[in-house]
Image 1 (tube, rainbow, N blue to C red):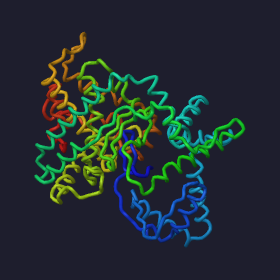
Image 2: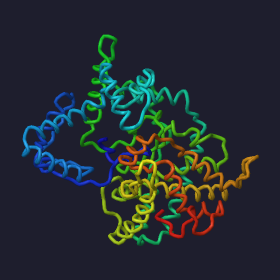
Image 3: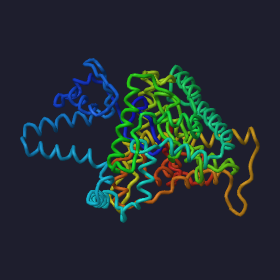
Image 4: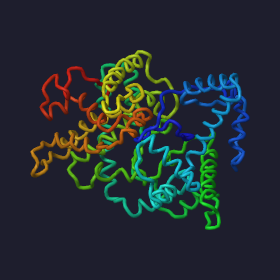
Length: 471
């Protein structure tokens, strides 16, 4: 999905479970990778040279192993299966731009989406065009982000948000210091890594400079009224591919944000060991300047803790504080970690939806589930630190809720979600995050702080005797 940030964990999710390194000519016997790469890069202006000894990181090696078998079986079966595979590959290539084609293409895509996600109406033209122009590979995402920041982000909120990150960092360091499943050398390395995490808030500074925004899009093909919409989109896609590939082999640039600030999201980048919180997520219901601290810590504070925790989950633990792939945990600590994560897998496997006959896949979602649980725990501890440092706050008037209860209520409100049955089915099959309901129920079942705040009886649904605990 990216180059130097190939394993970035987005809050909205991308499916990454493992990776392996291969010499590109040994990855699959049934694909001529040199010919494939040359064909893919042929239309680009960037000169890309891939040598026989170059390494490819396969994020999903199981997929490539299965693909290799299918290709081999198809070749052996003859033209019929080969045609099916060719049609499938063509479909995967054309599907992202079907909406940019003639009306018949749009209708076919709508009918497909009706089945796959349960949509009931085609997207309005103004929504579609807004989406196209504000997306990184088909539009001018950072130009849109620059407009968004200048018109919608309150600079005065930055100091509070940056201070929140430091309270969260301190809380996570306290958790590391008291874990029972880490040995001392792994603990020391973890404490060092958490201090090295870089935090980036709202937007990169260069977005406020028109000249730098124009430079960012240098080399873009002009968008004209004479050119067709499809050719405009294709030119943007080619520009973006060039923009990414020119960085091949370069050291990661920490000022190179993966997402534009108009996107409602946050992410952790293991290759940078950084956390990024985009301007658009720093709004209600996640954050409100001047609101009681317990509401902001329950909402955006949990997201901050979630992203910090990604640096120490199943994938983040494979990168050290400098963003290099390294085994910095001892084998004993890794083994203990895997034992603890099994608890989360079993817990989330039990979250089912009777109406569609599907359940959460605890293995596929375990990294995000661990980060959710860690985020809530860290944020609650961080808020307690603010009370000690800045004083206690009053509860909201007119509500029979304690400050602690309102903290958890703010957390839950941020994940309210509505799905169609088809959309939920597809989500459960493909997304590395659990559905919104389970992102609330799961972490709170594991939270002694929540059980104490709401006086949940021991052994009840929201206060089970067996709790999963990593961070």
